[in-house]
Length: 554
Ligand SMILES: [Zn+2]
Image 1: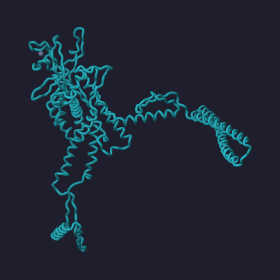
Image 2: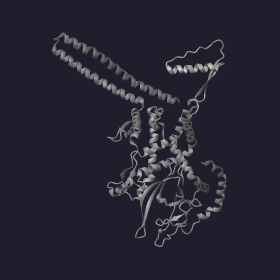
Image 3: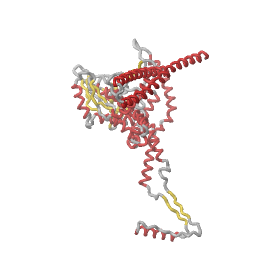
Image 4: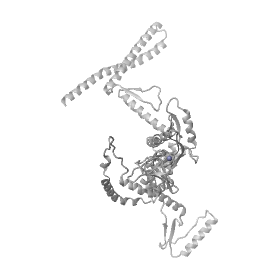
């Protein structure tokens, strides 16, 4: 890895760029010719172009190093595999774009989904590799190998015969000296062996085709294979540029190397260590008797594992001393585990993968944190799926002439379910708050899913005092109604008693008890409430008066 070697050159390159800009004379290019004027198309900046061309010498090595790191560091490999797994977990699915889709279009492509190249890979497998490249190197190259054919009217037709993943280490942008792509080499799609330097018609005797510009070159067995723009799908996720992306592994490079070092250290600590963990040093004038005593104890212990040794030590002079010298530090002493945890989290954050998804038990805190982590992760997955929906599938389907169908990667539903439920909870909470404020809250659509529930808010907020006043008025009304009902009941009972003419004293007593006391209590309560209610509106008015007085003073 020779990254640092690039950096000292930059100031010199910047000067070169200034010189070059002066030489090119941008205004020359911008002159109009005839009726049509065109602003110039600039190639890559000179500094960048030189850097990119320079880098190509190392790029192969660099990309291979990145791939090795991605594969060998568990903390990098597992988050990336996790995302790839989630993106493709429910497979690739068909979706019709119109009511009566042409099923023949679908059939033509279905064979390809299962076996899309000479290695019998399924399209999903190829796309998984492609996705892994994007997440590690930040450059994914998908090769659509095409068969070309001239029709009778000299028009050119093509069809895809293979879809392959190209190793990003071996793919180069074919840039000319000015940093422009599609300007260095030109090819006839049918006679690809004749590489031209200028756009011209094919030199083959019977061929009238115009040579097409080359966008990519693929390094294959010591020579370059030139490829058209329409034959390669290139995607960068983290830092897309005109050409190559910038691998996130380069950003966490030192952390990754730290982890590799830590792993090696652990391995040596537990497996390779050739020294005892500690040593006991005894200071004594008589080492020989100590050795005898020790071997005696060892022998006794071998005979009887439960043997308890007894050693007599003279207390007359206290000069003997025993030291234990530890030759190794424990993992805690080295602060090994927290450091590793920290590095691990930082690295996973690069890909937006949170501890909950890596199965670290301490990550499972409250429900809310967990939900938040799930949200983050499902956004990463959705983002990556969108990349396929926007940049990969349309190109493939277009090449197959499929118009009635689209390919889709369904979002991992059940994982997102918890998130959606928590969103619904939040909506309900807000709606109930608004309802308390006096707004009218209605369901937006009847018969809606619980998760996609939504509300329509109408009306105005009612001030708390008015709201309380209204509810009090309602209470009073209810109390009045109760009183009326009780009066009616009382009258009814009295009538009944009169009709019975006081025949049974027991009945009278019971009637007296039930009717008399209860009704009396309720009467008192109702009257008290009535009195309160009569008082309170007055209080409100008073308060209002007070308010306005205060207002005037200010
Ligand atoms: Zn040709």
